[in-house]
Structures are given as structure tokens and as C-alpha cells.
Image (cartoon, rainbow, N blue to C red):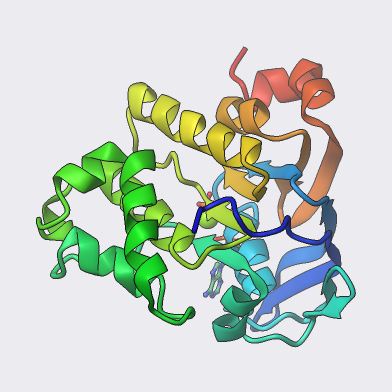
Length: 244
Ligand SMILES: Nc1ncnc2c1ncn2[C@@H]1O[C@H](COP(=O)(O)OP(=O)(O)OP(=O)(O)O)[C@@H](O)[C@H]1O
Ligand SMILES: [Mg+2]
């Protein structure tokens, strides 16, 4: 059993995805593709519609339009609880760990969608290899962890379901530059291991460091779309999103 044992995720294709809250449009006809083992970023300011896009993808808010496919499987009507069975792991904004449970129990809850077996505990050890601090604190209550450690726990919990595509919503939020560096290292390792990544961030620098392709969202729309290398050289992106 290895985090990377599973085959690569098939291509994820999202087309014309829209989200409305009441009459208000939060996401308008967003589309992107994550190739097998590929990494795609969505950057944007507060309220741009990044979280709504991910929630609609995951089936956590109603999709008012859109087609979602993973390889030859149509997930356009798939509910949130079934996404994990398709190999899609989700690290939500704000982490949503269980503060009153110890670290190891939080991680084991991430494996609920798979049959528990000897491999589950082996996998726990692999998470501790990836995030040594979680191993050191395995019996501590999750609520006693620092923000950075809680983010690692949220990522570790999602990895316990053996995803082939990992969807992350602002993993760098509220973290020090040093911890953002640790998150970057882990994401690069996962990418190297062949996991597909979909990363939503306000931190454009982190996103360009991890992804090969990026979308810039403003007011629910994709206003730019291109290779991360090209976007990181774009004058407007440099000014607005990189503060250069
Ligand atoms: N449950 C909801 N009901 C009504 N409006 C919502 C809801 N959730 C989000 N919105 C609105 O939809 C828009 C997009 O919000 P969303 O959370 O998707 O943005 P975001 O890009 O993730 O922002 P942030 O960077 O602050 O997390 C915002 O105008 C927000 O106020
Ligand atoms: Mg958000």
C-alpha cells in the first residue's frame, strides 16, 4: 500500500460550470481540464467565486449549469458523498477538522470511504512520513494544533481516502511564509508522485510554483487562462496578484 500505488486520475473536464445563490450569480460558465497527473490553479481575490467553483465541482452546492467528467464517467449529477469514491479528495477552505478528536482519529475518518484493513494503518504511517509533525502529535487533540498543523491534518485526512485527484481550497490561508513553503514542498512531492492537483488560492506565487496551468477569476468569471509560466510574466498579474 502506497499513497502513489493507485493509477493516475483520468482527465477531469469541467465545462460551463455556473453557481447561483438565489438570483445572484457567483460563478459564470467556468471551464478547465486537469490532465492525468496535471496540476491546475485557480487564483482570485476575496469573493471571486473560487470556493463556489470547487463546491459546485464537489457537489456541495447546486450546479446551475455545467458538465463534469472524469475520463469517460459523467459526474455532472454526482453527489458530494460519492466524489471520494471516484478518487477525488477535497481539502475544504477553513480545514474543518474535528477539534475534539485526536489527530490519528481525524486521519482515520478520512479513510471511511475505503474498506478498513491492514493497509489503513500502513497508510497512516505514510501520512506521518509526509507530515512528521502529525506523527509526533498523533494522540493530541486536533483542536490543540497550530493553524499550520491543522492544515497539514486536513490535507492528510483527504489523502487517507487514496485520492488520485486532490482538490485544495486555499491551503496557505493564514499561514506564515515558512509554513507556506512547507505546503509547497508537500504539493510538489504529491505532484511528483503522479497525483493530479486542483489548487484554489489567493497566493499566486504558491500557485504558480505548483501548477502548470492557471485560471484567474474575477467576479465569478475566468478573466485570464494560460500556462502558469506565462501568467506569472503577465504585467497585470504581476501587479494585481503578485504585488510586483
Ligand atoms: N452560501 C452563500 N450564499 C450566498 N452567497 C454566497 C454564498 N457563498 C458565497 N456567496 C457569495 O458568492 C460570491 C463568491 O464567493 P466565494 O466564497 O466562492 O469566493 P472566494 O473566491 O472563495 O472568496 P475567498 O477568497 O474570500 O474565499 C461572493 O460574492 C459571496 O459573497
Ligand atoms: Mg474561498
